[in-house]
Length: 433
Image 1 (tube, rainbow, N blue to C red):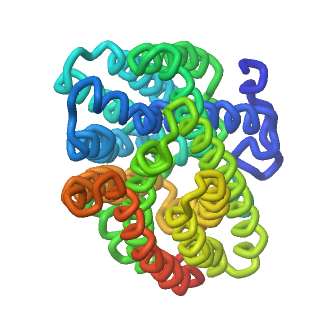
Image 2 (image 1 turned 180 degrees about the vertical axis):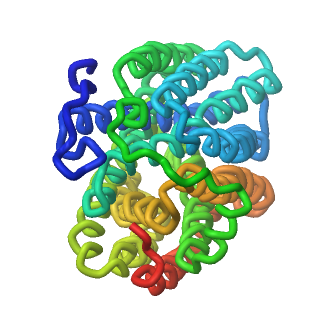
């Protein structure tokens, strides 16, 4: 990895090392870090059912553990950490490496917890560490890649979501069946500490290598960044689309695993790999396709950067409905894979717009504010809300209460698709770079 991260001279007339080995090596390593980010975040989904039985928890407590406990600290701390990352003197690569080592250690501590309270505190620690990753990584990638390549680069970084989810669910389910949920969390957390050390040595922030133009303007204040965001109708519609979309997707991701175990009778060792492949293959292909579509069509007309997310959100609705309705878990897995491809079109285009709708000096904070709203509503409230709904519907629906909750999620799917379309109408006028 070290040799890949060695910078070479930038192209003439360019402040960034575009087209260099340095850029490619850095992007690959950041994608690995993103993978660990989502692995440690998602593994608890497949472990939720054995944890529930071992500690005697309710669905609401599982929703709090997998959602709000993580998301509250992840989102709130993300803003000041991103503010620090936006400072011209901050070494973003070192920040990412330290955060990686911290959240990986806290994942291992989750496996050592002997009570719900201890597990909850360790899970909060995972959220604290992960808060420093994505805003700094997005800002760094946006400095490395020109506007016309940024959607593809951010989509490549976004492959960490499906790959991490695949590993989290697949490895998590298999290891849990063999060794239990505690050993699973410990074994999946410890490697991140090693990768953090490698990242600290291998990645070099282009700011520290003299590869970026000197900063001649002061860092904007938080009020200025907020005013810049509030003045952008495209940004506001976009954050609304992703907030509701994440509310539905994060809620479904937790309870889909439980749905396959309760309604279809699968064990964690089977449900984990199945859902890992569903989300891994579907979201990976969707992220790649979304980045390609945004680059191919958005270069000609910025409005079409968000056409894929809007159409994909609508297409995912009937596919998901069929998956939750069928009594055949194999057919359900196929339909969910196609639905995940459709909804996965959003990642690269969305964060391309976030980076392009604000000034360069505001990118990290803009990303953190975007993630704050998206994850507090989506990751924080989605699993918790669906858990509460499942508990409320249990007297009526029994073991099928989770299936009913997933039907409700499908019914709301057209709303984020509409909001993506509304955001796209303002892109031609508001995109800055």
